[in-house]
Amino acid sequence: MEFNLANNLHSLRASAPLVHNITNYVVMNFTANALLAIGASPVMSHAAEEVEDMVSIAGALVVNIGTLSPEWVKGMKLAMRKAAQTGKPIILDPVGAGATPYRNAVLTELLETAAPAIIRGNASEIMALAGTNIQTKGVDSTASSADSMEAAKALSLKYGSVISVSGETDVIVSGTQTAFVSNGVLLMTKITGMGCTASALAGAFAAVSSDPFHAAVSAAAAMGVCGELAYRHAKLPGSFQIAFLDALADISPAHLAELSKVKFAF
Ligand SMILES: Nc1ncnc2c1ncn2[C@@H]1O[C@H](COP(=O)(O)OP(=O)(O)OP(=O)(O)O)[C@@H](O)[C@H]1O
Ligand SMILES: Cc1ncsc1CCO
Ligand SMILES: [Mg+2]
Image (cartoon, rainbow, N blue to C red):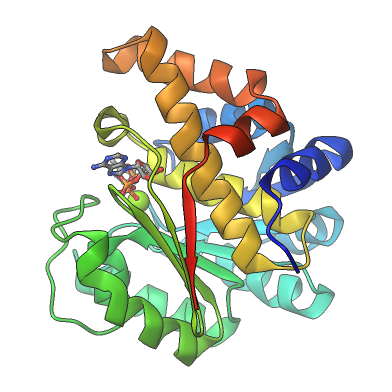
């Protein structure tokens, strides 16, 4: 299937998919607003009592371990199992993988529960998940996406997942296919939860696409291009965050495709 970014954004807006997020306290508000801005319909829900019902009516499940605790892990596992049973794509954001043994252990459990369609993280997180001995600085990367290529390939083969690594250039790996997205601005690393937003958008694109590789590339491109557009209006973190939401809402499918810098390698 040919990659068509404009069509992918058009499809997203045409169906406004419900995206079920089990995400962290830090970014809940911002990622819900980002999903609304781009044209999806977000819901944040983590209680074990309801996650199976919620994921059953959603188009995709985004699991983000940013502020995890044992009660939440129960909800994550129930939701992931139900998503797998009902054919809903799962997007896993392994926030802080490689920072603490608890995070690493929970990630092992989640990956044993169900295979994600897409795993989206920064380079440290992806390398830690692949077993590279690396210490993530809390939630911030200590490596570049270029350093993580081998780890991303190994992980993709192990779980059959698309691996999306964010950084100056985003690298998206699916088996033997790789895509490089070179949009974005450095200021994006100074707003908390931009990576979590990239994962949430991957959920929205995956909900409307049968190809998780193309969904992950679309999300990375939308993030980067909207970051560049926001930077035209706002050069400091507070106003940039708002300008970024505006860009997600304002951009047309054709303009997104025109400004995107995506390269594929096979
Ligand atoms: N050096 C950079 N230059 C341009 N864009 C960048 C750079 N680093 C990251 N980005 C972009 O910023 C967004 C967030 O990526 P980042 O790697 O910071 O995620 P993260 O560490 O998971 O963030 P968080 O945990 O705060 O959500 C992505 O869209 C990515 O493309
Ligand atoms: C800062 C922070 N701490 C836990 S989750 C989170 C949001 C960015 O990943
Ligand atoms: Mg992150």
